[in-house]
Image (cartoon, rainbow, N blue to C red; front, top):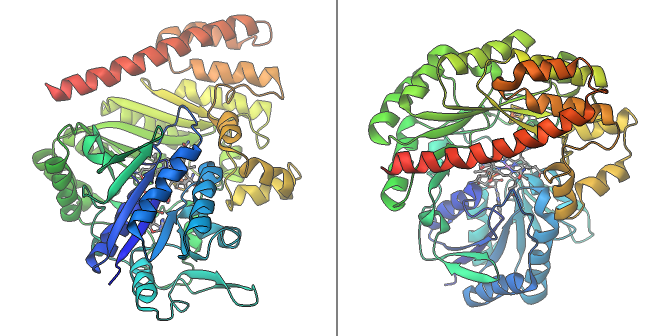
Length: 500
Ligand code: B12
Ligand code: SF4
């Protein structure tokens, strides 16, 4: 009996979603074949070559699966996943199923390209779908499935209850023969994770916040009206078991990334996690934090356990921009206090995320970000971005309602090519904002606040940014170079320190 299913993840050789699905399929007796189609690369936006698409075709050809599942997580790579999707449709007479964040939030658009969309968490539904497609029974009743009926009408099934006990999902598959990385015009057989220095996992599902530029709130709304709590934590046992497995299988493992949208701040959980992690895993780890979920007690325990880096979203120094436009309700003092906690507890690396120079912000509000940065307790690094409009997020409709963009303009930004999206948000031009040189000077000054040694000079320059434009630009260039160099030195030190 054919029991093969091909799963494809894009630009992410560690793709947690795909690995969870593979685990679910395996436990139902199926044989998942995973293609990691190209590596995650946040610095060079590589497009998919014809050769690479054809290599994916060859793997599918050899596997003869019941269906092909595409994990379409981010719209950044849509033009590239489309190439693979078209290849599958042209060459194979099997259903093409899309899941992942993008497919979940834009199922109708996705169905213009594929046969079935699976919305929401896929562990249960994918196994039910595989059984139905293998046995030739009806799949159209399966929860979370979307499809077009015989008249071309869009059908969206109820998503079903929330799985509250997420330990039941097990953990993502690590290692195995049926895995292939396609990159640089070649196939590299085996699990790329086994060759890595870092391991990525999530100890929870769901985020309790509602930021308008982020998909998290929209993903939560998909489950509106369903019984069960949406923000869920795995047991510490389950997390430690996964990490022990990772340690045993990954010889060069040096660093652990927790990709929980916000790492747990639950008292009992953090206590048990901290002592067990220190004793049983003992590797430095990174988390994403939130100003409202940070206190001395929790951070001190996590630092003792090996917390190496915290990345925390602040986004704007203007309380108005934060509350009215981003729906982030933390107060100025709460952000400053969170920064003091991280500094007091000596978290080795602290990063604050900012989104600046966008239509939801005035020049005065941009200056407020500069003022707030001066109040944050050093040392810290800044990740400075513009505002990235993501499909189906609340801020898209807000921008239309306020007359900032039309739907067509936003569509052309959100669905543009990989290179265009990259250039707009992460490329070298991402922090040069064409609309006003005044904004440029202030964004440069904000960048410069992360270097305590030049604070006095930066404050002096900020008294007359127009008159000091050249000096500010030159200083920024110099400090950018320094930052890049420091970053590489820190990485090397970390690997050497842990390796010794
Ligand atoms: C962790 C994370 C990352 C990690 C990924 C690490 C890893 N090893 O996978 C890193 C940091 C690398 C990353 C990178 C990026 N990310 Co990210 N990331 C997330 C985050 C917080 C969690 C993803 C995750 O692991 N979830 C847990 C797994 C189990 O869930 P899942 O992947 O959704 O899969 C489940 C279901 O969707 C479904 N499913 C998935 N695929 C399929 C396929 C089939 C066939 C079926 C049936 C079901 C199914 O079943 C799975 C199991 O339940 C999400 C937010 C979120 N809540 O999803 C943002 C998110 C996905 N990221 C986002 C973005 C924008 C990016 C980047 C573009 C950022 C950048 N500047 O480069 C890149 C793109 C990377 C890529 N290759 O696509 C956006 C995407 C929105 C959009 N429309 O594009 C999100 C939604 C956050 C946000 N801002 O709103 N990310
Ligand atoms: S706190 Fe982070 S993950 Fe949660 S909604 Fe806001 S931006 Fe998204």
